[in-house]
Length: 191
Image (cartoon, rainbow, N blue to C red; front, top):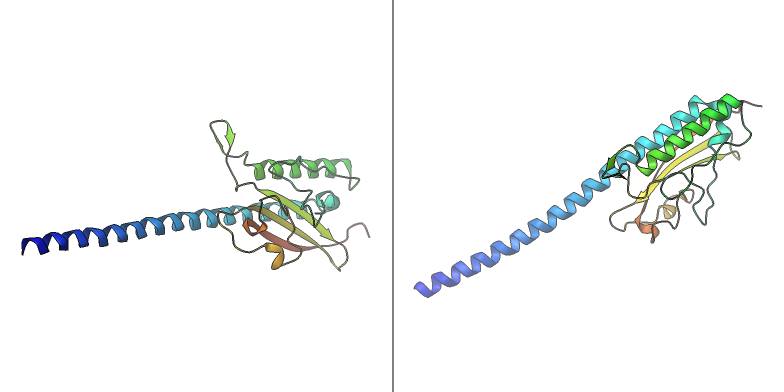
């Protein structure tokens, strides 16, 4: 009878080990999901921030239009880019405000707000931001997008919406590229 008890204990330990391994795997997935959720929340805040900046400086709204190339996903603000600068829109003061807005958004996307050991660690992984003005519709529509690298592959954002081209090809496989986007109308102030 003593031999059967030892086998029962070994089987119980095996079952418990498998259960604990499953629990550990579930914990890893939960942490990945938490990070994805955090990054999405940060991206939404940054996209809304730029939309608010554009609305607050409407006389130089053209400055915020750095139209994204559908093949390269550039130009963009954040990560490895240099901040776009304002063109010939508005007054000297409104252009200066636009340049400051774009520079601040660029630095926030790069994670300058939070540092750890001298490294910028804020925002999302490889955050990049795009702002595009679509003048083919009335009223003109702005699209502000924030892209970043996800933890696992899901679906290429352009397969859902062909206009989600911000930072295309910058994260290896586009199935790891995440994009949030805000569209809003922009009245023509110079018409």
